[in-house]
Amino acid sequence: QQQVKQSPQSLIVQKGGISIINCAYENTAFDYFPWYQQFPGKGPALLIAIRPDVSEKKEGRFTISFNKSAKQFSLHIMDSQPGDSATYFCAAFYSAGKLIFGQGTELSVKP
Amino acid sequence: SAVISQKPSRDICQRGTSLTIQCQVDSQVTMMFWYRQQPGQSLTLIATANQGSEATYESGFVIDKFPISRPNLTFSTLTVSNMSPEDSSIYLCSVSLAGDEQYFGPGTRLTVT
Image (cartoon, rainbow over all chains, first blue to last red; front, side):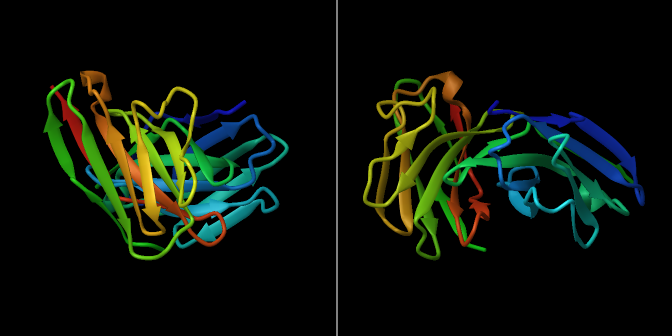
């Protein structure tokens, strides 16, 4: 129950396209779902986050869609750019600030 | 957000030795966390370090192997003891700010030979 499953493992998108990364969870006690972006040699950076009482949250080119009944959420990157090439992690809060992470998606945006 | 620094940024150590990693935050925070990221893998929580109390460890991590100190609200250390090559990882500290937002340091890249 303490798992967050993320897919795909890797993703190649053309510049200007839409990148979509999916995550699924089992534990309904999770109440906060952040996405992190990590560039090689750097720590993860908080990108955007959502709570389960909201179905969608948008910040610039980044959108989280949340389906509470299906226990799934996804990150959409609109107008993907080569600078978006990084590893993306979904995560869930499970207790007192503790995060459990998905397996990560390596995104490559081709020019 | 918070500015988080870690020292050292990377190190190469001999097996059987210990390394202490420092984490410094530019503001006072109650909750600090230590994570491990094995090569090409996701992040796994090692322990929660709150000032004034003993660190609490996640399943699979023990205090004898990963002792933690939290002397004040802006600083923490993680020691990796009696290292083996399997300990080669990136070690990251993070802090929880207002609400649920959590921010990570740049990480310490450890290689054990």
